[in-house]
Amino acid sequence: MEPEVIVIPLVEGETPPIETPPVEAPPEEPPVEEPLAEDEVKKGLDEIRQEMRKLHDRYGYIQRQLEKVPEPKVPETPVEQTTKPVPTQYQDYDQYVDALTDWKLEQRENITRVATAKQEQKNRQDAFFIKIDKAKEKHPDFDEVARKPSEQGGPTINPPMFETLMDCEHGDDIAYYLGQNVEESHRIASLPPLAAAREIGKLEAQFAGPTPPPQKKTTKAPAPTKPVGGKETLPKKWENMTENDDPSEFIAQRNKAEFGT
Image 1 (cartoon, rainbow, N blue to C red):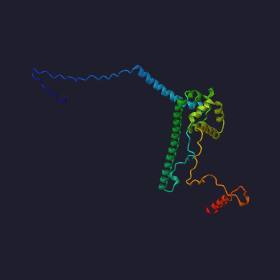
Image 2 (tube, rainbow, N blue to C red; image 1 turned 180 degrees about the vertical axis):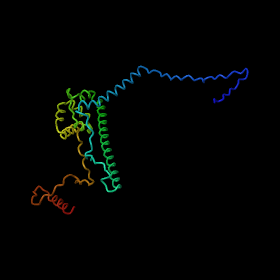
Image 3 (cartoon, rainbow, N blue to C red; image 1 turned 180 degrees about the horizontal axis):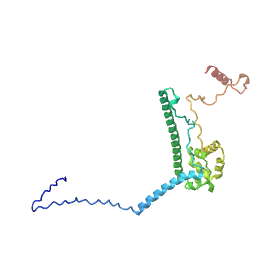
């Protein structure tokens, strides 16, 4: 049986309502950005190129003059690789939990130690290259002299030498000196690391200037008294006196020496 459909009749003269669709607002046009002036665009591009060139020079310096980028120093104490505890190694579960906790803490400390060493090495390298960038103010031809590849006649700076230069106060001046004295850089690079470090230390001392003389130590002791009227002469002995000597002078000096009068 079909459902009954009820149709509501229209009143005579009444028209059915016409549904009007909602009027959509026109989409907002994006704000038009004013084009940059040509000189501003050129200035921005020059700044980008300058930063890229600086980064290229900074890290290319290591790649060109060193055999490889120095690896970050690992801690002097070797990291012990312990195996992870397993429950079968312990008599009860509490011992296993304690051992597992200690193992996790040890692994975390090892990871932190290595990460700290890497960050310290990176900080040393960054500080050194900032010093290198400032060296151009003293030596405008620094790049041509100190950063010239060794295969093109530039200085030889191996990883041990580079590590020592990073710790030198005048590392930039030493690098420039080695660029001016390529044969000296070859000689130092051929030495064992400790001997090479000593040679670089000698160059550091030269750039640091002469050592000031030690200051004279002061004492609170009173200064020695000086006799008034110059050096006092001792009286002659009686047997050494001659006819020209005045006996009264001898007697006066003798009384002064013995009695203070």
